[in-house]
Length: 556
Image 1: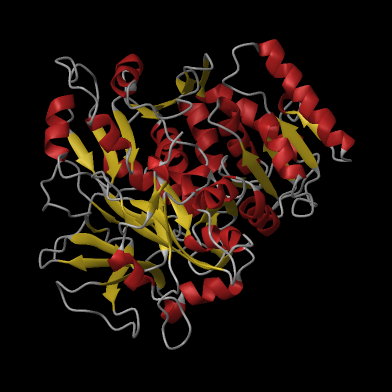
Image 2: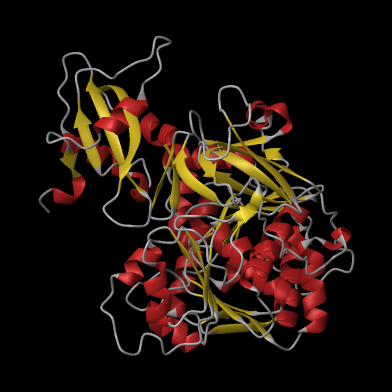
């Protein structure tokens, strides 16, 4: 059986698999070369400057928090985000990146679960966090960042000061982010071990709230170094990213790989399909990545004779679309690479660089580092070649998969039953060893690059007085990115009538916009199993019906 056999760690000594070690090393070996380049901010920092500034943040963090504490970051893409993440690692603390769209119960759950000691936020998030004050009671200091997109620095500074006053008036300690950093780098910063936590990244819940994946130093390093191997990244490369830093895709599949390789990392504030190719040219980017619909949006832009006039060598896409060969030819790209992995598992399945692969294949098993099986989800018995089974994974070396779900021991044990991590995803394998993603076995959705917990959409909808029952499912989106649209199937409370427009208005105040159901269908009853669970498979098979309301077709 063919396997992925190109994974050769940049730092062979596993005792060195920590972000502080990599940052110190690159400051020494590539100190005067540009690492962090944020064109919209006009900020370009060398490896040595990033190391020094992150060290001052680490020193400041240790004045208010302790080794092992958590540092919440809720901010748009900017240089300060990266410096805070690295500073937390240098301080022996774990970053907790939070989606900037979150509010209400979803935000409260993640803040309460992570229990951070420090929160780094922008002014727009102050009111949201004060609204869930009980959940964030353990936050000892708020550090407020200026809006990186602000055109007027004076106005941005005024907004920071106003936000700090609002927090102080509520009895909370608050400083401008610039004042979080000390004026020097302490000489006694800790030296974390590979097994120490460096991050808690929340992933989708299935039948319960979202779970905080605890990543050790070695886990995050290995995940990033897999990307170095996958894309053949070197210090001659420029890796450009437009996705949000609160996702692992921009963090340990872009920023961290560039750090390991000594490459330049170009960070844009947000994705733009219309400006994608120009940004690639302007940055002289050689590597970039796509998640979800990003590739489809770029492909649908009007073609130009100059599309291939760029330095792009490799695109890391998950997933790739059916027109990947045409995309590569249009934009003059040497290779597309793809994987199958989860935050919890790193990337056990990877596609070799430049190697032809069967249509739809995600890759081959990274067999030097992982054992993988496809099993019957009911029995955990392995299924035969060609059959669909749940992907289960276990590492062959310590610390390259998650330490567990933070504060959720029962969910951790459930996921690791029979000493294999159960991904909840259905795949099949062919006789040559290629793996193909087939379906989500777990009850989660993915829309516009965001993982969505059906539970965390259903809960706020069920709080509506006119709704008695609710089931949220995925239905196919009208593009080739292999993602979902969100659909809510509702049953009215006794004596009530459901006003769909009122449901959407209710949802937008309680659910992140990307998770607000596009489709709403009202039914008399939901199909149930004998044990009283909703048969969501039946609802997915029925899909969008003529009586289903579509949010995109509502009058303005």
